[in-house]
Image 1 (cartoon, helix red, strand yellow):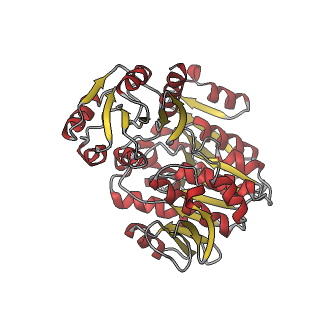
Image 2: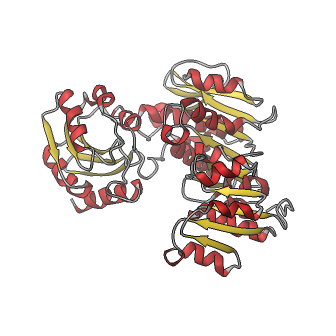
Image 3: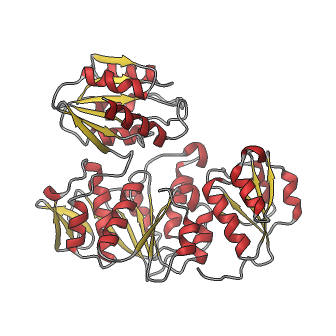
Length: 449
């Protein structure tokens, strides 16, 4: 860890805890800052805040009092999930107090370079693929970000010989001021999180921050099949490489005659790749590009792609029972993600879907239901998904209370050779704390079956 002096004796407010807030507060305390932590959860119900209190860090819990900003803070490190229209943040910006996210802090202390991955879909799979390829290639990678390990904690332990492979959300990227990855990847750009960002332009702009501080000594890998990604690349100072599933490239990663190509070089045969889904080819191509730019051998890339079956909760193969194959795609919290999952299979599908109602219809899902023979619904959106299923001409429609009860019902509606797919097209918060909890319940129900 770099022993930076930037924060010594500075008054810093850490706003919002969770894992990233705890890590940021502890790190800043070690760096000699005068840290105050402010979190909505009451102290009596907040073990994280209690732990920071024991370290000698000032903790204020229960609400976000605006008057706290009168204490003369020189910096705010905010939880990425807190929107910029939050009164506390809006007031801080008005007072010209800098606001960053914990990722920026991680970059400032890191001895190791970063490979940063962002985009609307595919971030976690791409991040994991790159990590596995670098590990197989003896490059000593570390993994960080929204994938379960806090960036600043990873950066604190990183050495010069490491590479930090980090998944980055638009929320995190809005709070950077110097963050500069050696390799940046934008997997794709669609409309998402507009309730947070307000407009498509702000959302795409936040994603574009990943390359904002890159120079000609760095690399940017973007989706060559998307105009919006190409426009983003034009604004970058980095050396740009594209990936494409539809066209040949002089430089970059693409498909040709059954091969994954890197420029003119054949890297791995498509038939040897075990990860299912056309959409995963984009993730694979971007990961291959990053691996090749990092000096990973084709043999190491082949070893990963011929064995990697997917990330948990992202089109994850669970088991085959009585000729039915079960897949857990609980991470599919929107229509786009579910449509990609449905497109990954040629076999008839029994779809398990439903969850939090955000006020949208599911008409956009109808064209992707042509291979679905039955639907089992649950949660707040059950009725809306059933309407979409009827529009698609699906006869087998059943409603149940929850994911656990959906599994045996789906089995009854299926036949040998079918795929039983949990791909909810909705967030989980109406019934479960996270999509991971929902996916774990599905997995357990499959194993019980």
